[in-house]
Amino acid sequence: MCAYPPLSHANRIWRYGWIWDPGSIDTARLGLQCLLVAVATGLVAYVLRPTAIQAMASRKNICGDEFPEFCYRAFRSEGEARQFVSEGTFRMPCLLTFREGDEGRKDTTEGRGHILQPGTVTSVWFSPNPDDKTIVTREPGYREHHSEQGNPKFCLCTCLPEVDLGHMRRTFSQHIVRIGNPRQLAEDIHDYYVNKGVRVLIEGCRVVYNKGHKADRMLTRNERVDLAYKQKPDRFRRDCEFRCVVIKFGDPCPEACKYIGGEEAKCAFEECQRVALDRPLNYLRMEPE
Image 1 (tube, rainbow, N blue to C red):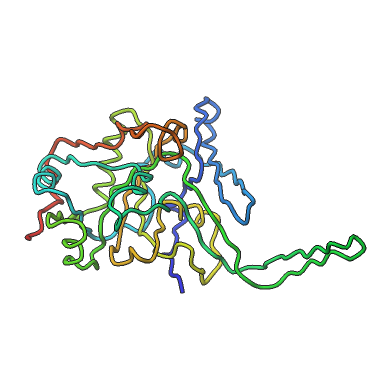
Image 2 (image 1 turned 120 degrees about the vertical axis):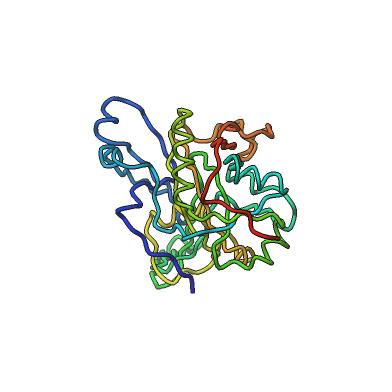
């Protein structure tokens, strides 16, 4: 059985598989056209979703109703943890960099969603004898759905309140910061990128640990697209992960990025991976070791 948090369509206006922003005057007037990409049994489904910019003008581009009351973030060193608290400086790695790292922690499936969804399965039977009829059957079963990330996504990975802090210390680090207001942190990150001239949307999402599993209900296209950046294999379940995901407007990752098959080791959007708010954040505190 796979559980999914309820969706608030009022908050979850933007859904991105592939995103593009033509930047024309007409687009600015009428709204962005968002292209959703969902790969299902070899077929690609495109859904155009116009969204009025005027609806977003009165608030920040932050969506998702999954923000917890608080969460935890582990840092490799005490210095990095204290810098986060006192200066608001930290890194938000590109999602696809999580495909590398220590053998026990890397996830080579990052950036890809995979779910088996209940539905009608169509089977076609061909005979080598051209005189025989082709047989088509339709019966209940499970259909495989795959999704891929499109535009660059940068993640601040944290742990939900229900995480075992002992597990965090053993798995990640002894140096843990409690984030007392995750939504406020998302707003501060949003303002940082906007002030740098980078157009972003930020989504807070709870990771689901059902990659490749059977779902207990039909998922919407939006939910299937989301799995590319909010789904992990079951072996990571104890992490109880909550992600603050920065989705960068503009072009998808360029071919030069190694994480989609190029030669370079450096992310093409390196400047997006470091956040420096340059002020203390009063909703952060060091957890005692």
